[in-house]
Length: 242
Image (cartoon, rainbow, N blue to C red; front, side):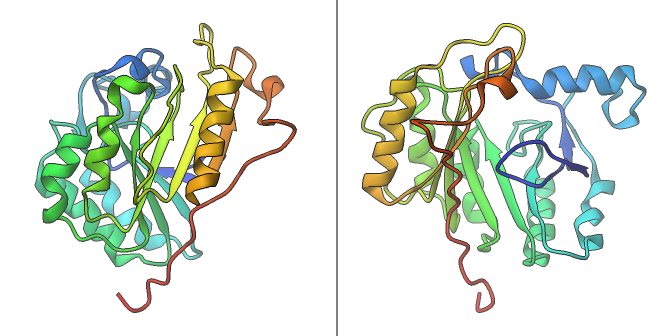
Protein backbone atom coordinates (compact mmCIF):
# COMPACT_ATOMS: atom_id res chain seq x y z
CA UNK A 1 0.00 0.00 0.00
CA UNK A 2 1.26 3.48 -0.85
CA UNK A 3 -0.14 6.98 -1.05
CA UNK A 4 -0.66 7.94 -4.69
CA UNK A 5 0.16 11.10 -6.60
CA UNK A 6 -2.46 10.13 -9.20
CA UNK A 7 -5.09 12.85 -9.16
CA UNK A 8 -8.13 10.57 -9.33
CA UNK A 9 -7.28 8.26 -6.43
CA UNK A 10 -5.83 8.35 -2.92
CA UNK A 11 -3.54 5.36 -2.72
CA UNK A 12 -2.55 2.18 -4.51
CA UNK A 13 -2.80 -1.48 -3.52
CA UNK A 14 -0.91 -4.06 -5.56
CA UNK A 15 -2.04 -7.68 -5.06
CA UNK A 16 -0.01 -8.52 -8.18
CA UNK A 17 3.15 -7.14 -9.75
CA UNK A 18 4.58 -7.31 -13.25
CA UNK A 19 3.03 -7.04 -16.69
CA UNK A 20 3.70 -7.32 -20.44
CA UNK A 21 3.06 -4.77 -23.17
CA UNK A 22 0.13 -5.37 -25.50
CA UNK A 23 -0.57 -2.08 -27.31
CA UNK A 24 0.90 1.31 -28.15
CA UNK A 25 -0.25 2.83 -24.87
CA UNK A 26 2.24 0.57 -23.09
CA UNK A 27 5.32 1.99 -24.83
CA UNK A 28 6.47 4.29 -22.01
CA UNK A 29 4.92 2.32 -19.15
CA UNK A 30 5.18 4.11 -15.79
CA UNK A 31 4.91 0.83 -13.87
CA UNK A 32 7.85 -0.65 -15.77
CA UNK A 33 10.03 2.35 -14.92
CA UNK A 34 8.99 2.27 -11.26
CA UNK A 35 9.61 -1.48 -11.04
CA UNK A 36 13.21 -0.97 -12.17
CA UNK A 37 13.69 1.66 -9.48
CA UNK A 38 12.12 -0.44 -6.74
CA UNK A 39 14.13 -3.49 -7.74
CA UNK A 40 17.33 -1.42 -7.62
CA UNK A 41 16.34 -0.24 -4.15
CA UNK A 42 16.13 -3.86 -3.01
CA UNK A 43 12.35 -4.05 -2.65
CA UNK A 44 11.58 -7.76 -2.23
CA UNK A 45 8.24 -7.54 -4.01
CA UNK A 46 9.91 -6.37 -7.24
CA UNK A 47 13.02 -8.54 -7.23
CA UNK A 48 11.96 -10.47 -10.35
CA UNK A 49 11.47 -7.32 -12.43
CA UNK A 50 8.58 -6.14 -14.54
CA UNK A 51 8.29 -9.03 -17.01
CA UNK A 52 7.54 -11.59 -14.29
CA UNK A 53 3.85 -11.46 -13.34
CA UNK A 54 3.39 -12.56 -9.73
CA UNK A 55 0.36 -12.73 -7.39
CA UNK A 56 1.08 -11.70 -3.79
CA UNK A 57 -1.40 -13.46 -1.46
CA UNK A 58 0.14 -11.79 1.58
CA UNK A 59 -1.20 -8.43 0.41
CA UNK A 60 -4.84 -9.55 0.47
CA UNK A 61 -5.23 -8.84 4.18
CA UNK A 62 -4.15 -5.21 3.92
CA UNK A 63 -7.51 -3.52 3.12
CA UNK A 64 -9.05 -5.06 6.25
CA UNK A 65 -6.65 -2.95 8.35
CA UNK A 66 -7.66 0.45 6.97
CA UNK A 67 -9.76 2.28 9.55
CA UNK A 68 -11.07 5.17 7.45
CA UNK A 69 -12.72 4.88 4.03
CA UNK A 70 -10.33 5.25 1.11
CA UNK A 71 -10.28 5.41 -2.67
CA UNK A 72 -7.86 2.76 -3.91
CA UNK A 73 -6.25 2.18 -7.30
CA UNK A 74 -5.90 -1.60 -7.55
CA UNK A 75 -2.71 -2.79 -9.27
CA UNK A 76 -1.06 0.44 -10.33
CA UNK A 77 2.01 -1.74 -10.95
CA UNK A 78 0.30 -4.57 -12.83
CA UNK A 79 -2.92 -5.74 -14.51
CA UNK A 80 -5.27 -7.91 -12.47
CA UNK A 81 -6.61 -9.53 -15.66
CA UNK A 82 -3.23 -10.48 -17.10
CA UNK A 83 -3.18 -13.99 -18.59
CA UNK A 84 -0.71 -15.13 -15.93
CA UNK A 85 -3.08 -14.31 -13.04
CA UNK A 86 -5.30 -17.31 -12.23
CA UNK A 87 -9.05 -16.77 -11.94
CA UNK A 88 -8.88 -18.10 -8.39
CA UNK A 89 -6.58 -15.26 -7.33
CA UNK A 90 -8.74 -12.68 -9.11
CA UNK A 91 -11.72 -14.05 -7.17
CA UNK A 92 -9.77 -13.82 -3.91
CA UNK A 93 -8.97 -10.19 -4.69
CA UNK A 94 -12.62 -9.49 -5.43
CA UNK A 95 -13.61 -11.15 -2.14
CA UNK A 96 -11.43 -8.63 -0.31
CA UNK A 97 -13.12 -5.76 -2.15
CA UNK A 98 -16.57 -7.25 -1.51
CA UNK A 99 -15.77 -7.52 2.20
CA UNK A 100 -14.76 -3.85 2.48
CA UNK A 101 -17.67 -1.76 1.14
CA UNK A 102 -16.44 1.30 3.03
CA UNK A 103 -13.67 1.67 0.43
CA UNK A 104 -13.84 2.36 -3.31
CA UNK A 105 -11.59 0.09 -5.38
CA UNK A 106 -10.66 1.30 -8.87
CA UNK A 107 -9.56 -1.56 -11.13
CA UNK A 108 -8.09 -0.75 -14.55
CA UNK A 109 -7.17 -3.19 -17.31
CA UNK A 110 -6.12 -3.28 -20.94
CA UNK A 111 -7.19 -6.92 -21.14
CA UNK A 112 -10.89 -6.29 -21.65
CA UNK A 113 -11.56 -9.61 -23.38
CA UNK A 114 -10.29 -11.57 -20.38
CA UNK A 115 -12.25 -9.29 -18.07
CA UNK A 116 -15.40 -10.11 -20.02
CA UNK A 117 -14.66 -13.83 -20.06
CA UNK A 118 -14.48 -13.85 -16.25
CA UNK A 119 -17.06 -11.22 -15.30
CA UNK A 120 -19.83 -13.71 -14.47
CA UNK A 121 -17.48 -15.54 -12.11
CA UNK A 122 -16.96 -12.42 -10.01
CA UNK A 123 -19.14 -10.66 -7.45
CA UNK A 124 -19.63 -7.03 -8.47
CA UNK A 125 -20.42 -4.73 -5.57
CA UNK A 126 -20.94 -0.97 -6.04
CA UNK A 127 -17.59 -0.14 -4.45
CA UNK A 128 -15.71 -1.80 -7.33
CA UNK A 129 -15.20 0.66 -10.18
CA UNK A 130 -14.09 -1.25 -13.28
CA UNK A 131 -12.22 0.52 -16.04
CA UNK A 132 -10.41 -0.11 -19.31
CA UNK A 133 -7.51 1.82 -20.82
CA UNK A 134 -8.04 3.15 -24.35
CA UNK A 135 -5.28 5.15 -25.97
CA UNK A 136 -6.54 5.43 -29.56
CA UNK A 137 -9.28 4.31 -31.93
CA UNK A 138 -7.55 0.98 -32.63
CA UNK A 139 -8.48 -0.33 -29.17
CA UNK A 140 -11.97 1.12 -28.62
CA UNK A 141 -13.37 -2.43 -28.67
CA UNK A 142 -12.20 -2.62 -25.06
CA UNK A 143 -15.08 -0.29 -24.19
CA UNK A 144 -17.58 -2.73 -25.70
CA UNK A 145 -16.27 -5.60 -23.59
CA UNK A 146 -16.44 -3.43 -20.45
CA UNK A 147 -19.97 -2.27 -21.24
CA UNK A 148 -21.22 -5.88 -21.34
CA UNK A 149 -19.81 -6.84 -17.93
CA UNK A 150 -21.79 -6.90 -14.67
CA UNK A 151 -19.66 -4.15 -13.13
CA UNK A 152 -21.82 -1.61 -11.28
CA UNK A 153 -19.58 1.38 -12.06
CA UNK A 154 -17.73 1.47 -15.38
CA UNK A 155 -15.03 3.91 -16.48
CA UNK A 156 -12.61 4.55 -19.31
CA UNK A 157 -9.05 5.83 -18.91
CA UNK A 158 -7.95 7.59 -22.10
CA UNK A 159 -4.33 7.90 -21.00
CA UNK A 160 -2.03 8.36 -22.67
CA UNK A 161 -4.38 9.80 -25.26
CA UNK A 162 -2.55 9.29 -28.56
CA UNK A 163 -5.16 10.36 -31.10
CA UNK A 164 -8.69 11.67 -31.60
CA UNK A 165 -11.61 9.61 -30.35
CA UNK A 166 -14.69 10.88 -32.12
CA UNK A 167 -18.16 9.53 -31.40
CA UNK A 168 -17.26 7.30 -28.46
CA UNK A 169 -20.12 5.01 -27.48
CA UNK A 170 -20.62 6.08 -23.86
CA UNK A 171 -23.68 3.95 -23.19
CA UNK A 172 -23.46 2.48 -19.65
CA UNK A 173 -20.19 4.36 -19.00
CA UNK A 174 -20.08 6.37 -15.77
CA UNK A 175 -16.73 8.12 -15.92
CA UNK A 176 -14.05 9.15 -18.42
CA UNK A 177 -10.47 10.08 -17.48
CA UNK A 178 -8.22 11.79 -20.04
CA UNK A 179 -4.49 12.42 -19.76
CA UNK A 180 -1.45 13.17 -21.85
CA UNK A 181 1.74 11.15 -21.70
CA UNK A 182 4.57 12.33 -19.45
CA UNK A 183 8.24 11.38 -19.13
CA UNK A 184 11.45 11.90 -21.10
CA UNK A 185 10.01 11.28 -24.57
CA UNK A 186 6.26 11.85 -24.30
CA UNK A 187 4.10 11.53 -27.37
CA UNK A 188 1.99 14.63 -28.12
CA UNK A 189 -1.60 15.29 -27.15
CA UNK A 190 -3.80 17.90 -28.87
CA UNK A 191 -6.26 20.21 -27.18
CA UNK A 192 -8.95 19.55 -29.76
CA UNK A 193 -8.87 15.83 -28.92
CA UNK A 194 -9.47 16.54 -25.24
CA UNK A 195 -12.09 19.24 -25.80
CA UNK A 196 -14.04 16.95 -28.12
CA UNK A 197 -14.11 14.17 -25.51
CA UNK A 198 -15.21 16.63 -22.80
CA UNK A 199 -18.12 17.75 -24.98
CA UNK A 200 -19.09 14.13 -25.67
CA UNK A 201 -19.15 13.42 -21.93
CA UNK A 202 -21.22 16.52 -21.19
CA UNK A 203 -23.79 15.60 -23.85
CA UNK A 204 -24.07 12.06 -22.50
CA UNK A 205 -24.14 12.94 -18.80
CA UNK A 206 -20.84 11.16 -18.11
CA UNK A 207 -18.44 12.43 -15.44
CA UNK A 208 -15.26 13.86 -17.02
CA UNK A 209 -11.85 14.07 -15.35
CA UNK A 210 -8.91 15.72 -17.08
CA UNK A 211 -5.78 14.43 -15.35
CA UNK A 212 -2.94 16.22 -17.11
CA UNK A 213 -1.43 17.57 -20.32
CA UNK A 214 1.73 15.62 -19.52
CA UNK A 215 4.97 16.37 -21.31
CA UNK A 216 8.47 16.38 -19.91
CA UNK A 217 7.35 18.66 -17.05
CA UNK A 218 3.77 17.64 -16.29
CA UNK A 219 3.51 19.98 -13.30
CA UNK A 220 4.31 22.97 -15.47
CA UNK A 221 1.87 21.80 -18.14
CA UNK A 222 -0.88 21.57 -15.54
CA UNK A 223 -4.49 20.41 -15.80
CA UNK A 224 -6.37 23.40 -17.18
CA UNK A 225 -8.63 22.74 -20.16
CA UNK A 226 -10.14 25.87 -21.68
CA UNK A 227 -9.31 27.71 -18.46
CA UNK A 228 -11.02 25.17 -16.19
CA UNK A 229 -10.08 22.18 -14.07
CA UNK A 230 -12.29 19.17 -14.73
CA UNK A 231 -12.25 16.77 -11.80
CA UNK A 232 -15.71 15.21 -11.94
CA UNK A 233 -16.22 11.80 -10.36
CA UNK A 234 -18.96 9.22 -10.91
CA UNK A 235 -21.80 9.34 -8.46
CA UNK A 236 -21.09 7.00 -5.56
CA UNK A 237 -24.10 4.71 -5.36
CA UNK A 238 -25.75 3.48 -2.20
CA UNK A 239 -24.26 0.07 -1.43
CA UNK A 240 -25.94 -0.62 1.91
CA UNK A 241 -28.79 -2.61 0.40
CA UNK A 242 -26.81 -4.87 -1.94
